[in-house]
Length: 153
Image (cartoon, rainbow, N blue to C red; front, side):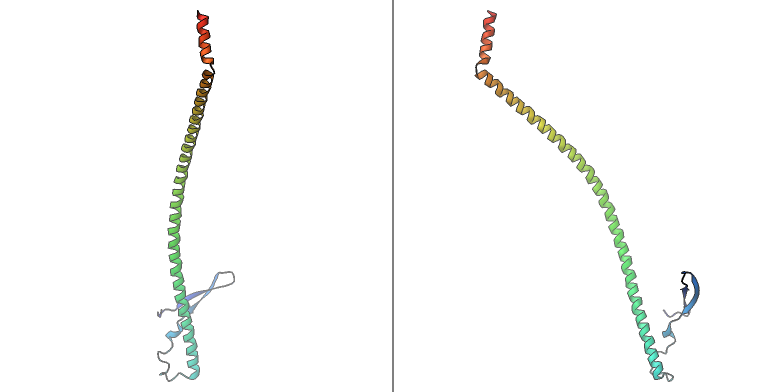
């Protein structure tokens, strides 16, 4: 920027406290627009002018790089905000999933217990039927009934 006011820069001492201010001026502001047409320019002045021009180009390049860096940092900050929001949503969702999974685990545990109890009862009933059939097939059921009938007479 080529404003009429010089920019001031703070100079810090070794304790990082402001010690003094100096004026930083734009050197290209004082240089002629066309050095070839200026009668006062000599070969030495042209060399100095080209060095100043190179320095100014480097400053402009650094300025451009810094502006790009600032834009990238701002974009990264926005991306971090988006990621933080997504992480919070994920944490909420995972807490809900955890509660739901506990309920499902409890339900499945009770289903497993019910199935085992039913299977055990079924096995006991089948075993009882087999025992009754085996006892009756061996003739003990008829004999007991026949003995009871004889005892009653």
